[in-house]
Amino acid sequence: MKNITNLLPIKYPIIQAGMVWVSGGKLAAASANAGILGVIGAGSMKPELLKEHILKAQSLTKHPERLAVNVPLLYEKSLEQFQMALDLGIKIFITSAGSPKTYTSWLKSCGAIVIHVTSSPELARKCEAAGCDAIIAEGFEAGGHNGRDELTTMVLIPQVTDAVKIPVIAAGGIIDGRGMAAAFCLGAQGVQMGTRFVASLESSAHENFRKAIIHSTPSSTMLVMKKHVPVRLLKNKFYEGIKKLEDEGASEEKLIQELGKGRARQGMLEGNLEEGELEIGQGCSMVRKVQSVEEIVNEVVNDYQKIIKGA
Image (tube, rainbow, N blue to C red; front, side, top):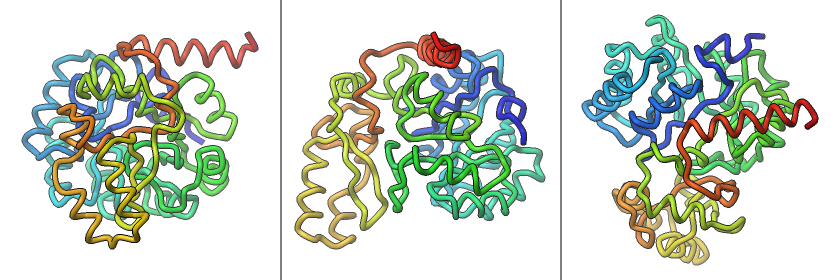
C-alpha cells in the first residue's frame, strides 16, 4: 500500500480541504508552503475565476506541485474547470458530488492524480474500481454537504480501510493532533481538515464568520436539508427558518425555494451571520483562535508527535 506522502508531494499527511468561498489561492499557497496539500475549492468558481486563483496560488508558493483543485462534479462547468486547471499545470484533483467514473480515467490519462470524496464503504469500492488513486472518507461530523447515511468518522474509516486497498484519507471532525492520531489508529494514511482552516488568517472567510466559529459551542451546528442535499450549518436565523420548514414537513421544492441563490456566499464570504448559509464542521467549538496556516500545521503536527511518543 502506498503511503500518502509518497503518492502526494507533501511533507505532512494533511490535506487542506477545498471548501466553497473560503478556499482560494491564498489559502492553498499558504498550505503548500507549510508542507501540506493546498486545495483550491472550485465549487464556487467559474472557470475564469478558478484560473485567477490558480495563478495567484502559483505566484505565492515555491511548491506549486503541492497545489490541487477540488471540483464538485455536479456543476455544469466541471469539465471546463478540469481543462483550465490542467492547462495551468495542476496535476492533483479532488473530485466529489458525483460518480468517480465520470472523469477519473481521462484525468489519469492526462497524468493527474485523482482523489474522490466518499461517505460510505460501498462508494469507496466504486472509487477504487474507477481507478482513483486515493479516497477521502468523510464522516458525518464534516461541515458543508454530507453523506445521507450519517456515518461518523470513527465508524466510517475502519470500514473503508477494510473495503479498499488504495490509501484512505480521513475527514470529518479532525481538528488537532489528537484527531490525526485517532484517524491513523483507525487505518487512515492521511487526514483532510476543513473547519480548522476556515478560521485561518489566509482563508477567504469573512471576519464575522471567523469570529462566529471561535465563539461557537458543541451544539452550534446541525445537519439540515436532508430532503435535498444534506448540509451541516452553523445555527443562525437562516438555519432556524430551514429547520422550521423541515419540522412542518415541507417539500424539497419548498426547501429549495427558501435556500434561494447565493446564501453561502452571503454568509461565508460577505459575513451576513443572520441570513447567510454558514457551512462548518461539528468540531468548530474546538477552534478557539484565528491562526496562520503555518501555525495550525505546526501545532497539529507537534501535538500528534507528542501523542505517538507518549509524552
